[in-house]
Image (cartoon, rainbow, N blue to C red; front, side):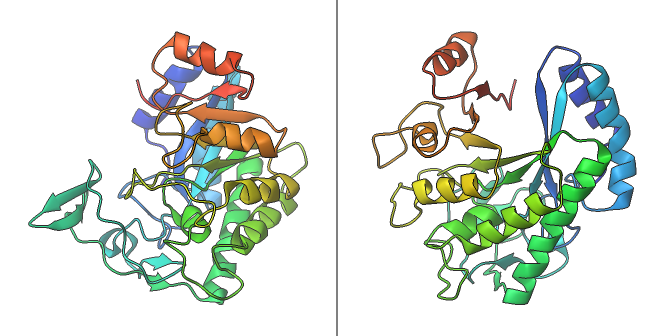
Length: 298
């Protein structure tokens, strides 16, 4: 879960070439059920503080800011990676879309690392939900101690936070149902309460999921406007709009995701998604609705 020399060089190359902000890749908030990938980054212990701090300091020496993105894979993982039961808001198997990360073999979708099937996850108990909220808060507190300038809560791409917010992945009828966003409200509140006021908390949003790129937008299934206003009220500082193609309308509506976000908050917005040239980046910035451009691939 700690950075290798190779990973450190990867980030330093970017810090040395004038990027303003680096967001460290999705880092699991525990070493069991949160894990989405073999050998993936983790951030949840004093050991991680010690191991990430030298890289954070070197990035700062180049004049760049750095956040760590915190996540829980939810149902988008397999037991061969977590070594425990796969957890999700509801006992609903992943969607069937295949991709680089999800290979199809003899009609079954397999994890690209383990070559094993995705199974029906275990429904989270309320006690387990509270534990995960505390783990996110713990990671936020450790991030500030490490010297990170902020954290990003990964609420996109069909991972656990996203799963709680969508009615196709959350069939709960208790307080943690898909409509009220109580899980998100409690999680963000817990994170905000353990860090200082000048420590940035970003929240990443998307419609698309790792296992369903073409999910149709419906306010009945996931009300972005309601969620964004809640996040704004709970103290989120920055919104990160992850789009299939930045600026393109969401499937099923006449608006891009960052347009919906801008209608519901005055906070800074990051946008990403197939921004592969300067002209496209400039056009998005000149539109006046976003403040930062994120690039995740060469």
